[in-house]
Length: 334
Image (cartoon, rainbow, N blue to C red):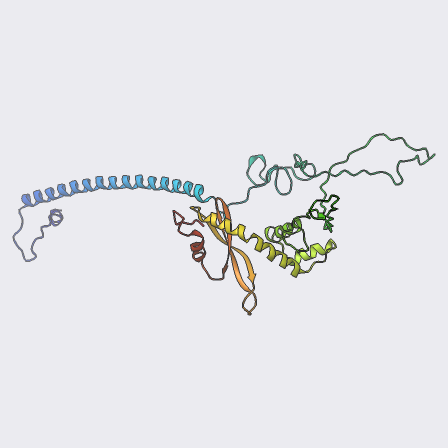
């Protein structure tokens, strides 16, 4: 035991019989060294506890900062459209059940929710739609007794349940301009003619309403040109795809100043959302077939701008043209 204490104290006896340490002096030195080590160990324990406390405090501060950062990011950029689920429309789900799948409990499991006939709490209100009234009667009008032939007297009308009617009409609009001739002797034109309807495309085949519907169906609803041609043919209007494409091109030229104004206004926004859609734009190439472009959309608080970019180009090239040097932050959120 004494030998172990001596070794712990740092005193090693010589193997060839060097001078042996005195028992009392060696024991005192060993005890003194043990006391010093214990004091040092206690100081290290205190320092370790302080370090652990500071680490826990910094961890709590880090979690708080992360939560605050998440809140600020949602306030600044909004929720990600690729991660968030669309909210159900007001008044019920897409099936018209009048409530969500989760029911009152909100669990989303669908348990306890009545389905089938009579499950809806009420239909949506469609009183804002145009109303057309139809009156139905027996063939020939009135009704006679099947036994004696005596006619029945009118009683009252019965209005059955309202229904939604979907009517699509492609009509030929004929415009007649009134002409007038002079009856006095004044030095004015002998004949005058009333102005006709406004036309965005001077000698075009389509009215302004038709052109607006064409652009809406083509670019807002995303219908293909073949689908539009087929749908118009079902209504009796056989129109060439080239005619529709030419109308879209002419209308696009008319909308170019508006697009430039929206772009100019978007440049003044300090922050933009940008993303590349999967809708490919096939623009005419140099002879090797259609050139493939991709559509980039930039959304600002005061408008949206879209650009056609070649395959492989990054959004940096587009953003440099849109952001300009009037962006105080020089910053984009995706």
